[in-house]
Amino acid sequence: MDNYSNHTFATLDALRASRKHVSDWLWRPWYAKLWWAAIPAWWAGMAVSTKVTLLTAFYDSALAGFLNVLFSPLTALMVLGVGYVRHLLARPSVAGVRGSLSDDASSNIADFWEEHDRAFEDLNASTDIHDPRSGALYIGNPISPNNGARINVF
Image (cartoon, rainbow, N blue to C red):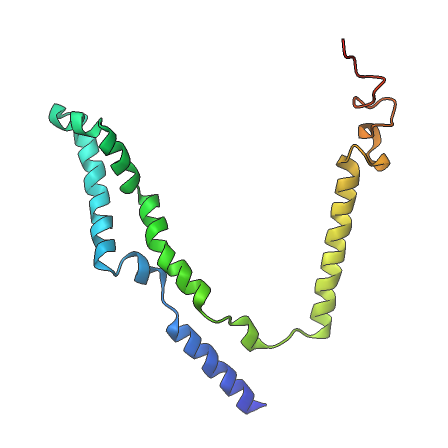
């Protein structure tokens, strides 16, 4: 058993060592540094354009509208983060190394999902106009606003 746990810990350590951090994708490449440095420069230029009329003409153009999207920090975060997400999805799962759940844990999980299903069945019954358990919402109920006798067409 001890040999198995040593092997498991060695595998987990190897997986952690091969895992790259978010900063490896968002800051380390030269183009990422250039992009992040250009973002404040762009927005500082836009702030200056409120006082300088020569810059106002440029920042009011259609090209500047496209560059606003390009130099948005969220755009940079999304584009540079694609590599990190690909890396996360490509790495092997650590959950398979840990082993299976105990019988007690799996029965607790099954009980939780049964309770969850019962709660949503009750919720659906109370909000479904076609279910008689929904009370006044039920179409066949004479006080229901959905009842045909209560709907005035004219």
